[in-house]
Amino acid sequence: MRSVEAWLLRALLRLPTAVQRALAGRSVVVDGQRLDVEMQLLLRLRRLRREPAVETLSTQAARKAMRRQTRLVGGSQPIGTVCDLLVPTPDGPIPARLYVPRSSGPISTGTGPISTGAGPISTGAGPISTGAGAPLLFFVHGGAMMYGDLDSHDPVCRFLAENADVRVLSVDYRLAPEHPFPAAVDDCWAAYRWVTGNCALLGIDPDRIAVGGDSAGGYLSAVVATRAAEDGLPVRHQLLVYPVTDMAERSRSRRVFGEGFYLTTAFMDLAEDAYLRSGPDRRDPRVSVRFTAPVPEGLAPAHVVTAGFDPLRDEGEAYARLLAEAGVPVETTRYPGLVHGFLSMVGVGRSGRTAAMEVAGKLKAALD
Image (cartoon, rainbow, N blue to C red; front, side):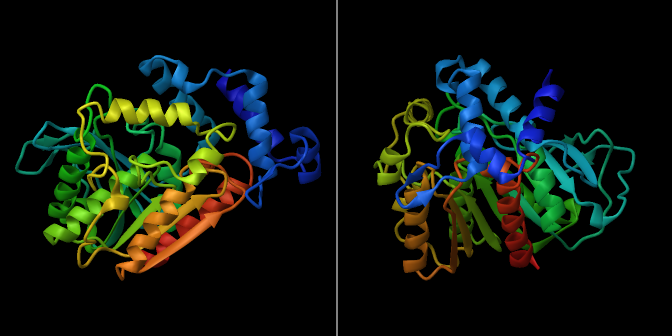
């Protein structure tokens, strides 16, 4: 059934733009921006299917639904090699997945488990003998700190690895409500520290490591980059795609685009309440990076990517301004016609994939 659904979706999004416009309905213009016709068609199909809103489902059902949705629009993306790992952290091992692009050529995986000095790391195939010197993206998946995993973001990690010509290490941090703040922050920081201490094992250049992610993953990546600058760990670049940066205040874009454009106010409120049930100050920079003060010296240059019809648009751009005012090199790219989640749409249509290709190209340039 999923294969039929995927085929139909791909077919609809390959139609000429004029046909898509007829199916999607009249153009939607908000805040001086015109909604991309493919995005409008996807949203209309979603309404016609009467798919239940994720926030109305149980946590487990919602996780399953989001995994299905992201894999549906992500498609099957080529990759050279994929290795599953368990990264040791003070709170226990967390799953991770290493993606090696085809440009690296075949790699030798040996016959035994990777040893880190803190216990073996199972890869299913053994240690990775790949030489050294490759760039790496330390990738943190989105999902509002409640959803998402290695599988939900597998297509986009493959896409970024191949099109940016970098290795990608995706980490599967603990999720709320079972593990509220600061569990996700602690996991991502511990995993990043492990990565910087095991560059030879992963075949990567410690001077060419980027941190990045989408939505909640953009937020957690920004926290990791800030902590790395404070502690003197290397980060070459930040890739922050429609990041959550402010859980204390409500921006104008949250009010304008909170209904009807995929990411909803109800969804965000549910996720933030689950994640912050331990009661932290919402202006704590580990919660809302827009309140980082002072911005640490040596913070890595950032590429902040936003979508015009995204409730998170304004806070992402506000964070970019904060960094720029502190002297951090920042590039901000807004895709005015797109919606939240477009980075995952690498397997269907043209608009999301084209934007993701541009994001990958700038990542490649930043790490060259």
